[in-house]
Image (cartoon, rainbow, N blue to C red; front, side, top):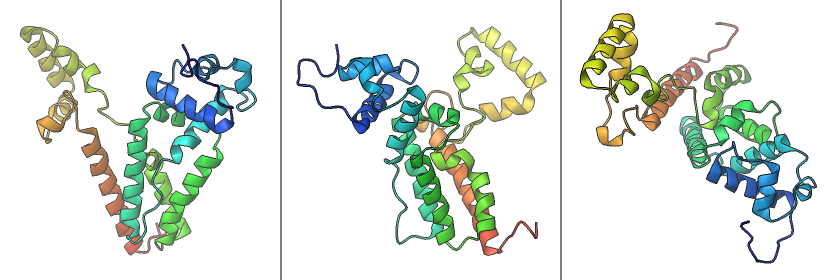
Length: 237
């Protein structure tokens, strides 16, 4: 049954279609999302959607533009470092609300107006903070996907690793597997088993993702701050 039920239909427009698509992806994930499924949710025939979005790729692009508007604008009255940090953590909060968005962002080949506007505003935080165009160019490379609130994590899904699987086995087999890991990959095992976080703050047996993200972000911003103070240029490098 559609969300509309027996209620009077609301006239469709592009924004309503995109908002409904975001809500559906939030509920079901990006995999089940299709034009047909979205049409059912809106209680219309699929062809009605094509008046507003030409195809699924355009739908996905539009959905990204919708959630970008949820990212906080640059804060005022703060130095560039605090402004950038808050903006990145706001983007991360948005992606945590819309778990499908990271996958879509990683697969987009065309930059939409919303993406361009966010990038332009993001770059502006550095330029308005007194950064040169040269340093800002290299800073944007260094920040990469972190500007959207995510990174490629080394220990992203510990439950799927050998160590995580071993926990489901009996103690003797588990110990044998750990010993073999220690023999073959001692450094990986040492880091994977390390934990400096409050156990209550860690989801499952993995790292505290938010802690690790902010730790790396602060390291990066501290380094950028140092280069800015030194008036670094790529020509001197």
